[in-house]
Structure formats: C-alpha cells, structure tokens
Amino acid sequence: MDKCEKAIFTVLCMIYDGNRILLQDRVKNDWRGLTFPGGHVEKQESFVQAIIREMYEETGLTIKEPRLCGVKQFQTDEDERYVVLLFKTDKYSGTLISSDEGQMEWIDRDELKNYHLVNDFTELLKVFDSDQYNEFMYERCQGDNDWSIRLY
Image (cartoon, rainbow, N blue to C red; front, side, top):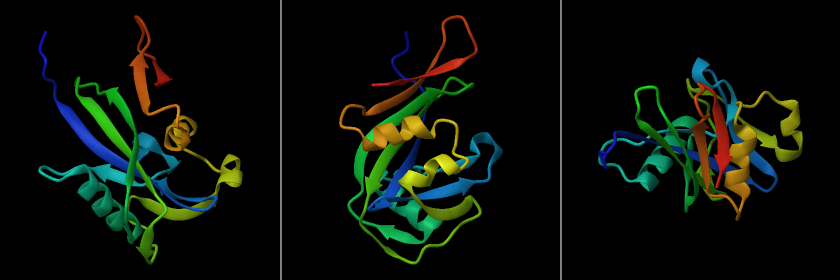
C-alpha cells in the first residue's frame, strides 16, 4: 500500500465579534449558501499565512492571532485528500468588503436558522465551537455512493 497520496490544502476562518459571526453567501454552485470565508493554500505558503491572506482578499479584514481549531477532510473523486484547516479569531481590523466569491455579512448566531446555509454548516460550526470535536470527515458509506459525516 502506498504511504503517499495527493492532497489539496485549503483554509476556512470563523471571524467572530461577540455573538456575531462573519459569513459569506457563496455563489459557486458546488457549495452554495452562507458559510465561512476561505480558500486554497498556495505552494510554499504556511497555513497561517494562507488564512491571513485569504481573509484579506475575501473580506478586506486583516486578522490577527488565528487559532487552528479543527480539520475538515474528504476524498475527492480523483482520489485526492481534500483538507480544510479551520481557524477562528476575534481579532481583526479594516473595512469589510465582499468579493466575487460572495457577499459578506455579519450574522447573529441566534438568527442562523433564518438563513440558507451550506449543507454541512451545522457540523462545521460544532467543530469551530467545540472542545470535544476537532475533526470533521466525510466517509463513504459501505458499498454506496453516499457520504456520511463523522465528527471526531
């Protein structure tokens, strides 16, 4: 069995201010709805550099002290491991903007039920918020093309 596999690294960040979280209304068809902003890690870029750059590009905010709080992962149809590093911070400065990725909006947590969220948002939020969970993984169901979500 090969010990190496191709991997794609990406980052997401929960920027929060008290009970409000900053979400992006994603316009791409592959993952539509409100979710956390993020993007791909570039070659030879650290994960922290990537999250700081992505937050600036997508939100106009300069974040400080991003804390790694979990990982989301799944296997792509091309058999690559797709890894999403989850960061959070409440330290930021700048003026909020939106990008062509989607409109940025501060949402009160108590109002989340009134919005169209990406399909795995609830599980993502559990990992961002939890001291119990630090991994979110899509696993293929036995002998099936369906996926289930497991939190570890």
